Image (tube, rainbow, N blue to C red; front, side, top):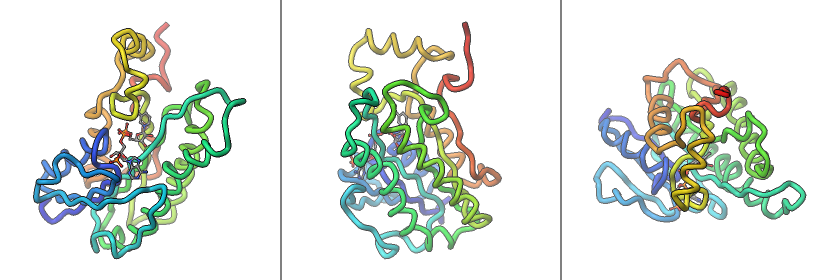
Length: 235
Ligand SMILES: NC(=O)c1ccc[n+]([C@@H]2O[C@H](COP(=O)([O-])OP(=O)(O)OC[C@H]3O[C@@H](n4cnc5c(N)ncnc54)[C@H](OP(=O)(O)O)[C@@H]3O)[C@@H](O)[C@H]2O)c1
């Protein structure tokens, strides 16, 4: 894969960092866009560009001329009852999850066109396909991401493949408040048919497939990686 170059927006920690590690282990080079650099920036295969999805613009000139695949990882988990949802909070969810992705995808389109069957991965959440209380803001924003994904998968076929991963709870900096004690961790694990919450490797396994030629016949899909939560009841 030494001639492959990927863009991982939000590759400085969490799921995105694990995706960067997977791609560089395959011999690819990766450009990371995020507010802080990844801890592996010293690797010659990884370049970092400081970029804030909520405030910065982006043009094609800021990205590699040829892009083998792109993952957009910035996201949010702001939970609360619907009657208390402030429009400002919904706007913030939309900015980081949807508007940032739109800016990146518009800038990346020329580079993606230079690769046959380039792979794009966007992130949704289990709370779009299954109604969960307290998730109004994030489910609305991620639902919009799923709609965008399907449109782009159609509009950009056959040159570019576009898919979403819809995780349930994964142990990352984003979710640390939900997993902040042993009691919470045990309670969260019990929610899942597979009796554990997710690890970054669970999600990066699927992202790696969708980004690379191994997933070359997959497009327009929302792949649930959620310990069975969205589809299975065990009791
Ligand atoms: N973790 C979960 O339980 C869970 C569940 C369902 C869905 N998801 C989705 O999965 C995706 C990845 O989640 P994660 O848990 O890995 O998140 P994370 O730990 O918060 O990592 C997010 C990455 O995006 C970057 N980022 C965040 N805000 C940004 C901004 N405004 N501009 C540029 N970069 C930004 C962060 O880097 P900097 O801070 O350096 O900018 C980081 O590299 C998200 O879309 C999330 O909504 C996660």
